[in-house]
Image 1 (cartoon, one colour):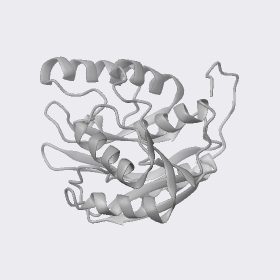
Image 2 (cartoon, rainbow, N blue to C red; image 1 turned 90 degrees about the vertical axis):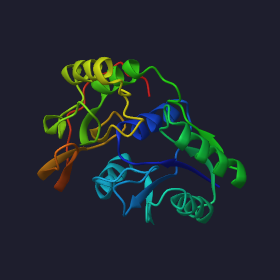
Image 3 (cartoon, rainbow, N blue to C red; image 1 turned 45 degrees about the vertical axis):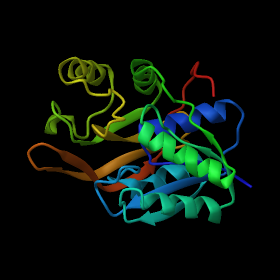
Length: 231
């Protein structure tokens, strides 16, 4: 039996992983879905191949599962990888999306899997404040009104939280991007033994949406310091 985390490399799945580890739960496996479609309703698209660096830094075994990324059909691919790996506990970074939450819950119930979503209905500003304080996470895609190319590749820090707060007021975005407004990628986190350094990247922009694409990255030593973060 396997304790697994559905892992995209973004802020939500990484924070969810940290939350359950802090509860004393050992995670044996990271499951990363690789979608052929940029329009997947369930899974991240940009930079998922670089989650292998995160998995190495975390010291957790990882499996990749390919999916066409077609609405509803992609759930069969998730169901298969869960069965193939004898998953009995699945951790996800779901926060507000009923679409994603309900579908994972249904699959978990069908397969007799316990689904843990420790960030479910978390206060968005509380999560972002924790991300800003303890993580190094960047924005890797944007696709909603109010966002522009200047967001791509930028760290989620206090200035970014302020920008997101203004977009929420003006356009009604979900600050955690649960409506598909944006995606993120974590370069460093408390459980990482090494940080990720991006050596080469590029941006794609088509007028109202875009992506920050990592082309070359590697693990690097990080300086550890005293912290009052409980893990």
